[in-house]
Length: 174
Image (cartoon, rainbow, N blue to C red; front, side, top):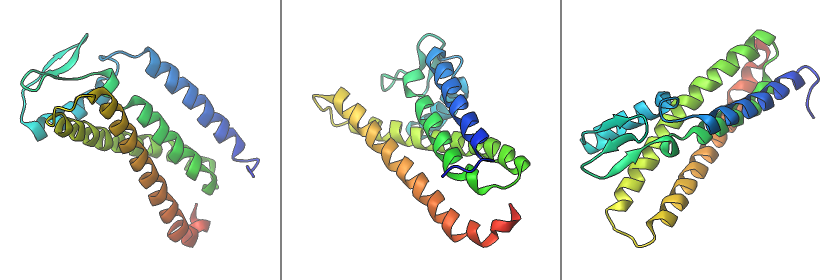
């Protein structure tokens, strides 16, 4: 049951979800540079490859013929992980100020988590590409979905464990 004092935050979460989805849908490579640049940087470190950035194309790694663009940004995963954290945890906070701070912390956690997961996904797909499989597009999508699902489940279980083991001990401090 949703508590009366938490309902406005769920409405805010839904509004944020809609707003972020619309913003992501209308975004291009230059708008998503805040996601693409760190992912590209980590991928470049892993592969030791040179890259060129073009606003129309994205980050192009010529040595591997790989492009990291909007479709590789993990924007939907960022939105989904942010919403999962926010909706799962917002009700445990008692004070208005704590809830607002938590929303900002959720954004930061989701951002770092998205960079890590999406870079991992791209590196796994990069390694799978070496096998020169016939139906790579299908494998590309299935692998990406599997990785995203596994990490979302791990994020949820980690939060659930932490919430049940640690937070209940300090419940009155929020």
